[in-house]
Image 1 (cartoon, rainbow, N blue to C red):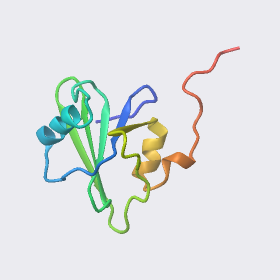
Image 2: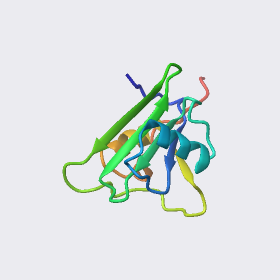
Image 3: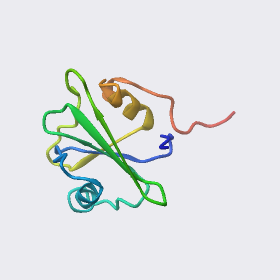
Image 4: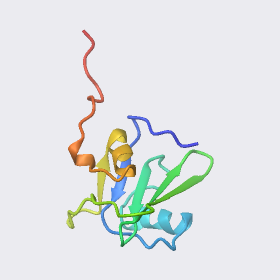
Length: 117
């Protein structure tokens, strides 16, 4: 099972991916387009062209997990649109909002680190 923790690095690909790709195709996309190692343990999020489906690729140390969420109605209204970069990073709570078809830019979570005192 995949558990999202605040310490995980979450990378969202800006360009839509061809969802006919499986684990190997998305891992190659991580290397080539995002310039990231797919075996790093980071969580990679991809969207299809119609914005009705997301795929999540993550390596857990033994193998890859590939998860897909397809909306029954509507589409994912938020997606990074900066064409100058290939990816955008999100916090774990922002990915939870994205998976619920919300806007992760409009939520604010607790800081990852704060002094105890």
